[in-house]
Image 1 (cartoon, one colour):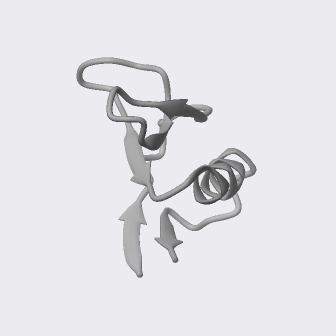
Image 2: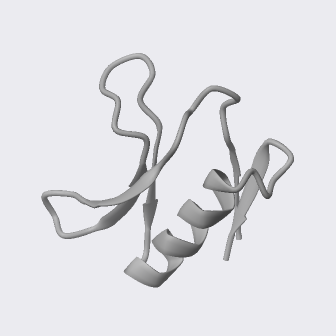
Length: 64
C-alpha cells in the first residue's frame, strides 16, 4: 500500500491515459502546479479520483 500526500490546492482531478497506456489521476495542469498519480488500472484510478474530488481524505490517500 502506498501513502500519497494530496496538495491543498490541487483542484479537481480527472482520469487520463498516458502515452504508455497507463491510467493516471491528473489535475490538468502543467509545470509547477501539476499533480498526477499513476494507477494500475482504470477502476483504481476512478476510485482515487472520486476520493480526491469529494475531499474524502485528510491530506493523504492510501492506494491499495
